[in-house]
Image 1 (cartoon, helix red, strand yellow):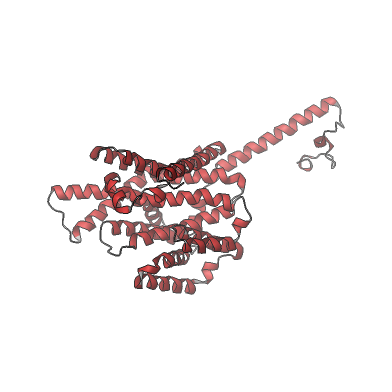
Image 2: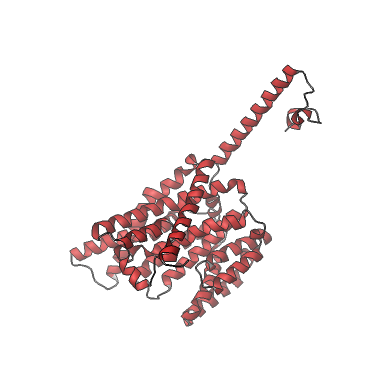
Length: 400
């Protein structure tokens, strides 16, 4: 800083040596402090006004918009019975996981520790606000239609603390689904819990450790996740791909044929034998995401389709319930293709409405509310919620 404002090369004033007269020293000291404050203020404003890294990344890949929309639609179509394969919805979620690993892993690989508050703020505003609406809506409707029990409150705690995937289906899936609000309508929240756990663990490993930035590390994590048959295999596969890209460049652009073969081969394996689904699904998910990772300009219609995907996944049940109620009251509902297609149309309407009312407004206005303190508070709140839910679940089910 000294050389930038014309000081003596020895910069003795910053070492505490008062080589000038007392009056001149105080004048210079005040000027130097003022300069520092102004620079910090400019840097803070610049940091606060920086666009979300996630948005900057996703703008490069137009196919991701359509991929998100197709995946969310597959989940809904599987829930309403149009898609008969039992794993169709789960496979779509695995592709979502691989996409998150690729995008968020890529962001974290170039995020310094000083920018983590911004990362936590972006994740909280992007996920928590739409998710909070979905949770509140589900439990309000359930409160109106069902009696409140201790188990009902327990499910709410797991959903709020992002531990649904660990404890909600205990002691067994059949018993738990019947006891869940609206008989398991919110069971898809398990994937939000997996995503949130990834958002909290990955920064600790990637940002604060050089070891966590190496693709070899994520290869081990990926293989371990497959071996243990966890839902983190597809996400870790996405981070692995991002780490390889950080080391070797856009490898996916040069490997389209290999990725296509991997997607087809893993798809065939899943189709022939469900017993290998746990290992082949992450490979298929990553291959599909990498095939779509082609830098192309996004269209307005594509942005809308991609934007609808998350609220469609969260809130499709609102449209489904509404259409079912109308058709049954009019005695028009049937189990042929017409009823389910109308139900899907209702789900699309629910997703579009909540996107326009919530998600779009959040993404348009969130930058103006960012401060470093807010990011830190949200990050600490996320870790605290997860830790509380984990401790409660472990004690509740006598796992410790």
